[in-house]
Image (cartoon, rainbow, N blue to C red; front, side, top):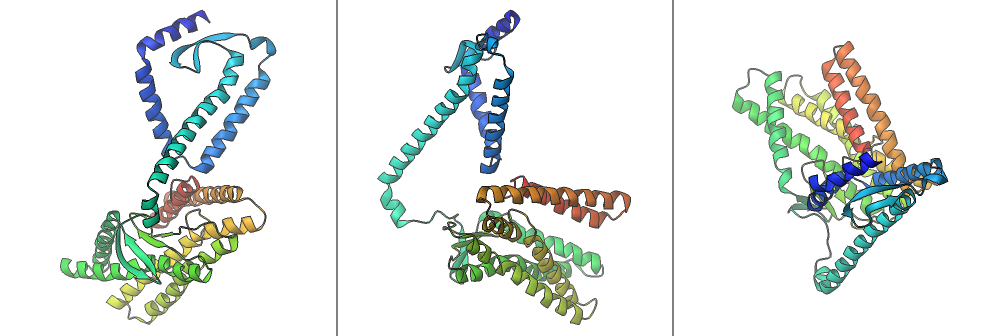
Length: 356
């Protein structure tokens, strides 16, 4: 105990309070970047269980033992007994709760002073350039969206060159541009189709956002019954299913090796991949939404249903990732294996809450 006291007496000289505060603040911000409400609740429950387990294991005779803490935190400084240390858990929590409450009160006060601004501009949706309106819903593009069509055009031009080596670079670029104009609507059209089911469900969509990721369907009012959530999720997969069927007919009717056949193939692959991805039980897509609210209808709380969907996504992701690695290594099917592994990685990331 004396050696430990000597070390801790030296710590404040090696790291002054200002340095500790800076490190503590930045480490907290770093840890909060990937924090979600679900993970926060899980960490809270885990910490409570760990504290109760430690409390049960400590004999009563040890509660008067003490330890020296540097003068970094006023609530935990100087000679601290084991009994006080367990009480510090609640005092520490209460101090942060008071800080949050103070910030919220200041925010409410500030917003009440600017209430005329909120009344005139009630929308809190992401901003960008409104390209057009579909079914009364604005389709908004942010700056981060525009590299996607360029990259997609280049990728499809490269594929056209692989399939038809005799094409000039200009012809390959033209083919890539046409293919992009076929592939992109398959993705954006899926989101646009949701405006139909959302309106039929009585809870219209407010915005379609195009950014660096997949198109996002945004609603100001998500406080709707489970059945409404499910109905709003149906028309996207239905659009992709119909698009896949029509693309398959187009592909089969087009002369093999022709430009029409290649464009039909791009359409078929685009609609089919989006269809399969959208019905997967993954938190960020339609399948995950439908599964979650079906579980709520069956009696689970929204929080428990959300955790269940995340766990299913993690499990399926691990299976697909493992199968992809096995195919690539042992069956030498690198393309199929890589595709499965990529799908598994996406499902794991969604299950972890890293995809929004």
